[in-house]
Image 1 (tube, rainbow, N blue to C red):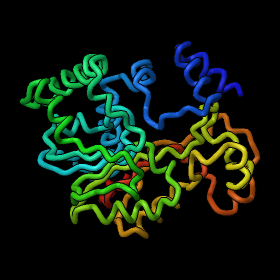
Image 2: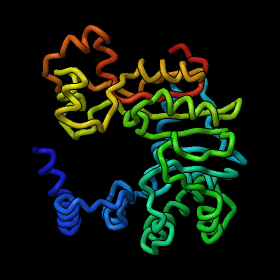
Image 3: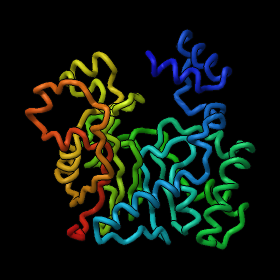
Length: 296
């Protein structure tokens, strides 16, 4: 309840009213709302995508003999790209041949919104150009977003994917997918032979609690779903890596960070009998193609 109250206070009044109206009337459009996107400091920070990818690859280079992704002339697929095309704008500016976003809630009006183009895509363009000099004008950049980015407004299993993808990406998405093995098998079937990938997995409860595992380990999954819903699949890091391997991928898994701080609940035998404590408190991991370790 405290988290709900905090969320309400953090949103603009008009957004709160609209969300309450949708809840009461059952009126949900199943797409990202433009007003919510524009009013979100999280989504509208133009440097966010680059910062995330740069941070992930910096961590990978600390632990693995990792070579940075090269988007030039590549076919790229992102699962769960979010309201503003995920890493597609960055990849377009870095020369990818095509970019496919699998995002059921994408709102096509995003690419026709003057305020989003001015407040998000223009600063992003200027920022990435300062770093890499894409060699294209802003007008060409927006044109490329409209022509070379394919939006699949479906779940991954239902998406019509025709390319063999050189690079596949996801950012805090896989933990939300039910029947993950079937989805990873689909992903494998559309991946090129030398496919490279980065999948950031957030293993916390996604409920904004002081400790990100609060409430998760005090009960079994069925009880958790009954109380909190099925927003996350409750798979742990080793489970997810095993499913990648079962689907035919060869993977490396790198710990981003653990988070046991502020945790003071008793752990149910369901969890303590299946997993070591070290794994239970892995907050975020990065799964990539198999890469030699630096042996640190």
